[in-house]
Length: 202
Image (cartoon, rainbow, N blue to C red):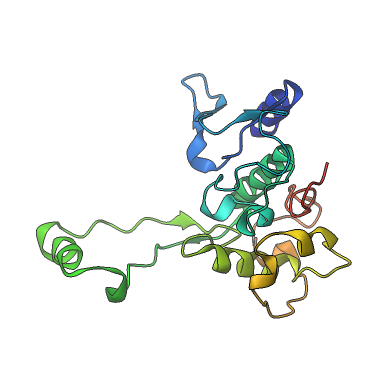
């Protein structure tokens, strides 16, 4: 249903630009419904070279956004985010990692430890990419899965505004099954690593 919903809005010239699990809800009739079209655009809404790159959410942002592209295909962004979202169906269930003492101030630590009882831990799906800390770490986690881009695999990367600011270790691409333990070998590519990740891909 998620794929059909994205196909429907794309067929009508609309790109969502913030697909992630929190923006998919299940209706009373059991249908998957896309919500939060606050940063959606229609084709040609934003001129090439002036497109906003501060879109998307954490682990579901395509790499061209990380490197501040203002010339990208918004429909390809949706396909990237859709693939990252669907990948969680095949991800491992894990207990959440508690916040480290260094990430909390004194009040937050007191409130968490003393003012409220600790919540019962619940299992969560691990995201394919790590977008929790910074754009740099998100890019690094993408490259650990799909391989560090080269001039052959992603020639458009050299033109991205912030790409040259960082140096990444030369990670080789790894099989998705090694990150998604419940992925069947014939399940395909889930959309991750297809069109998005290539600045201006169509």
